[in-house]
Amino acid sequence: MADTTAKLNVGGTDQEYSVLDGSIGPSVVNIASLYKDTGMFTYDPGFTSTASCESKITYIDGDEGTLLYRGYPIDQLADHGDFLETCYLLLYGDLPNKAEKNDFVDRVTYHTMIHEQMSRFFSGFRRDAHPMAIMVGTVGALAAFYHDSTDISDPHQRMIASLRMIAKMPTIAAMAYKYHVGQPFVYPRNDLDYSANFLRMCFSVPCEEYKVNPVLARAMDRIFILHADHEQNASTSTVRLAGSSGANPFACIAAGIACLWGPAHGGANEAALNMLSEIGSVDRIPEFVARAKDKNDPFRLMGFGHRVYKNYDPRAKIMQKTCHEVLGELGIKDDPLLDIAMELEKIALNDPYFVEKKLYPNIDFYSGITLRALGFPTTMFTVLFALARTVGWIAQWKEMVEDPSQRIGRPRQLYTGSPKRDYTPIEQR
Ligand code: SDX
Image 1: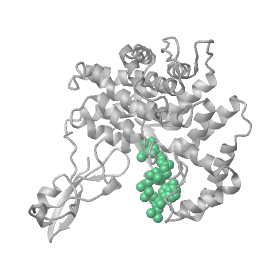
Image 2: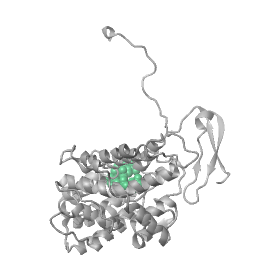
Image 3: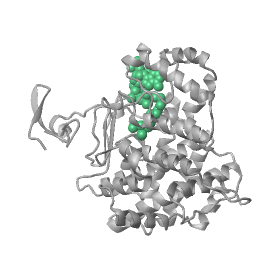
Image 4: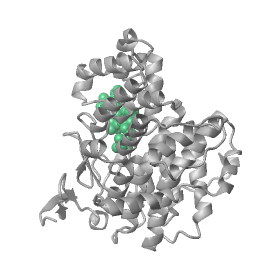
């Protein structure tokens, strides 16, 4: 860390704070003692200029449109790796050799079943319950099955909890889908790889053999890689904050799922596809672009813009390529929604409003079209995002728990409410 300092004059008194340099990316001003020194808090709603932690897992350069998992560019991992290898990388910090990879795959494979009692949770939901509501409930319920065996101070227990989460999310997600469509649950198979297993658990039925399409399984696996982690986004920050109290990791992941559900975050893939359907035809695009620019209209182009990326989201490029691959493999020559998406992208990228605000397509812009082509209903899109992001959440949770400097997260506030006042009896009000 550098020994440079930042000077701040507060109320006529000069304060000095150390500047800490990362390995790459912006340095930080360590203002931890600011309140003690000045009696003031910093103020940064939305945390646009605030680093909440030190991390070695994921690096994003929003201006360059760069995304690195443990230093490896996302496009290289998506092109050459697979999802479980990426999970190993995020959890352990390096790519596995062959023996490590085989051992990790085996350890995940033999945790894919869930307690048979859990299948009863689903029957408590209405069949038309949103699958994300089911995910929040059932993943949180995992804590009831593993609470006693999850001593988070034990590194071995932390790794088992991590493996359980990664292994069981596809099974729970597939069960949420099967329950939603009224079909019987399908058990995981140990002879299938992670993504093929997931597609089979979602789409096979007892009446016939299900043959996994390797091109679609590879596309699913790549989509999971793209969604695996993304620095301190809203849902990851939620998991870290929940975990900072020492809460059960399964409960922390349930909190992350709840946060991801919002349309400004992971819910944007479902919202983006619904938006494309609402636009309905290329000639209505100008009308919606005008609405997105109108300050008085809450409408936004879903799948566009990003807090960090002020360039093209590198994941969106890979997702667009995957979208064309999947549509090609399925023989879908002209998907009207894809035509609308590509025309909307072209118009938006040349519109001064979007150019000056640096609004580009993000990962959610093309994912909806791809997932729909794979056979998923829009209500499952964010479930798939949560499935993939679980490894990122759990890797960040582990890093937080293992950080000797971590303390319970407890932000302060700028209070603008009523000063102290005395209670008045109701007769006097
Ligand atoms: C994800 O954080 C992550 O890393 C998240 C994620 C991950 O992997 O975890 O990348 C996943 O959540 C991707 C983002 C998915 N959300 C959407 O696609 C929803 C649509 N996008 C917007 O809601 C918005 O862009 C956000 C929420 C993504 C970012 O919001 P910010 O950073 O708070 O930006 P902002 O809302 O302050 O917007 C800046 C300006 C505003 O105009 P002004 O007030 O400055 O005049 O840009 C405008 C906004 O009105 N703007 C948009 C817009 N997004 C921002 N205008 C039209 N359409 C949009 N989509």
